Length: 228
Image (cartoon, one colour):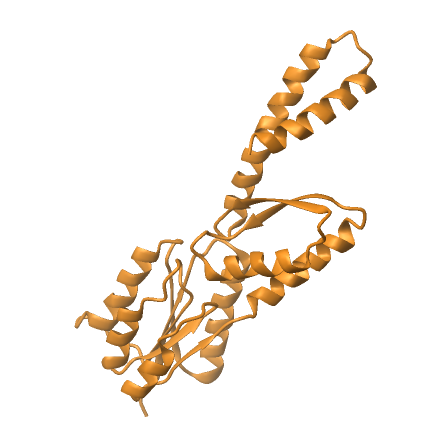
């Protein structure tokens, strides 16, 4: 009996979730006695489409029995999906809503399906968490995923449905990695740090420290919002 082989294409290898997906796929492959090849797109949708086409069209590469992938961008590559199905390769889309699955199922005899979380419900839970954390209202810095990610868009929509009106949300974009989130937060904090330094100088070093802290906190908190 032919040993089955699968290609699993993930968005990156930089965050815990993607690493856990890779580890789970490899573990399942060992348990089931199938070959699993993990590839990463480095958050580049174009690179991911080229990687997938390589396995679908390159005659010098053994074709997998199926491709499982999480889109690195806003598209789930309908043309690549059709080419894969036409070549007899199963196609699985993870964490992304697509509208071409039924068409491919009608046209080809290979397994085609999608599996995803309910990202809008995830966002609703986040909004409820905000309410629990700030029962009297306040402000929150909300780090979203990439702008072209349907998961990020759905989570934000859900969050806004349950977020109390007395909580103001400032959003910034990142790429689902700890490093990109660190850069986003650092860029948000930098003007405030600069403001605090300038404010302390303006208020005067001879002023009492508690007074300088109160004044600069009020000034720089409002400045931080206006700068964005």
